[in-house]
Amino acid sequence: MKRRISVTIVAALLASGLTLSGCSRGEGGAVGPSGTEKASPWVRPPMIDGVTRDGGVLIVRGAADPNARVVLRAPDVAAVAVNADAAGRFELRLPPLHGDVRLTPEVQVGEDAAISPETLVVIQGGAGPVALIAAGQPTVRLDGSSVLNAVDSDGSTLVASGPAGQNPPVVTIGGAEVDVAPAARDRWRAMIGRAGAAPITVAGQSFDYPGDGGGSGFSIARAGQGWRIVWPVAPVGHQSAWLPDQAGH
Image (tube, rainbow, N blue to C red; front, side):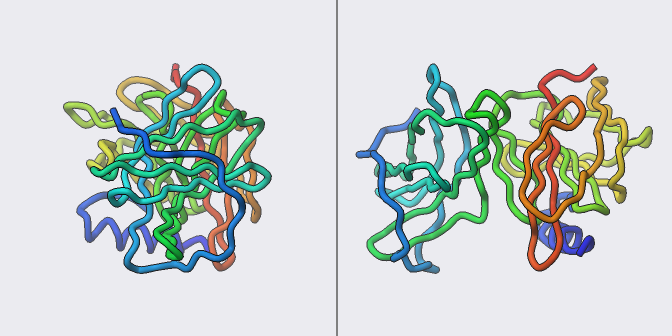
């Protein structure tokens, strides 16, 4: 379903004008697995906007409704929860993590729950990249500040993205200069209709994109000088995100 992500992204970007295809702590702690929450159109899911390290612990920060109960759930890991403050800010300290972990952010208000469409991916327990992935959307890198944060693909389209500066960077993909547009969360995006391996240059730094990788399940693996995440997209498609090591060449 190689056209799905392109159509979804282009439609969203036409609406937004983009180009693609210090917190108070609440009462926190571990919570058990749940299956009783009901999805609610009245509850806003949390939005994670930062991750920092405190020794061996990751601290996840973000925004939700005031006093909302924010929960991060992961398979085989005790869920962790915290209350947002009166301004809606939250700070959630994760327990020590091992290996690659996927966490689903959600908000609980009584019996209602709002599950985020984004998944927080922590590679190698936080020693590797930390990113937010979502079907049909460019990956949001939360660790580091390389000029190139991520390259997303659905098998037919590439979307490169990175942190915004005062001026948009000059970006080339496969030797061709591409248009750069501002994006949400203080980022830029550049899109090209191809998916194979290609050299990418951003602000004079070069990166060797190793290609989409394909596949139908969820996987995380080293790929060239970086990490590649692949995940399924309904009904039968996939999306990948390549997260380059911090320095280009």
